[in-house]
Image (cartoon, rainbow, N blue to C red; front, side, top):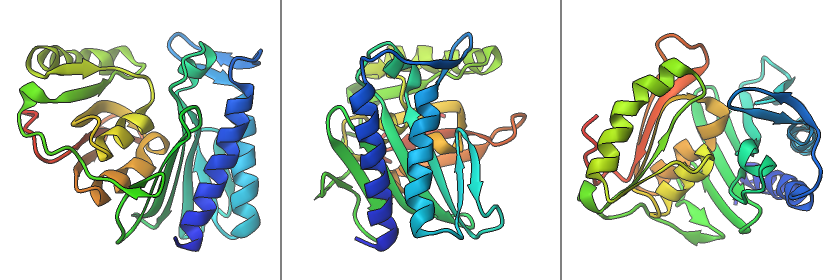
Length: 248
């Protein structure tokens, strides 16, 4: 394990411990939107991750859901989501994760996704196999969409929801099962280890998926990531095993 990956694992597990300790407790809500929640714990988790990473790499930048820290001109940028699945967390649904990636310019070097409730940690680094709790993983070898499970993410804007509904409707009809589980990073991690065959979302932030991009590719899958046509810093993504045809 490289020093970068070790640092990401350490930070993800520390933040995950914080989340696990606060799961089910009274929570302070910073912002409550129509389809989203921002918690004080989001900020506290990000601050913990930032403190651990910047203590090791003070000349690096950190870009996350709760803002930017460190040197904004650094060629090394940590991309983090301190709670991916905040609404699940707030409502007591034990399906959420911490996501941490490191990129140098446009290349993702390492990625870690940690589910603290199941104590499952996905890790990857450039040029090495993807792992789950230290064991190598591979994407599913299923080849028929009718035998596959597809996760669909529907974003928070009405336009993006409307744009995604035709695909969602078709996947409900054609796939074995269609799932909406509320944590993009876990959806993409599940693709990497073969639990899901594909994850598709039309409007997503980089911090939700950065770690998973390299994870799926090093596990043998494929990722189609495209900048969104009208939303800055947003993307559309289709992460698959590479063995099924979604028809998109």
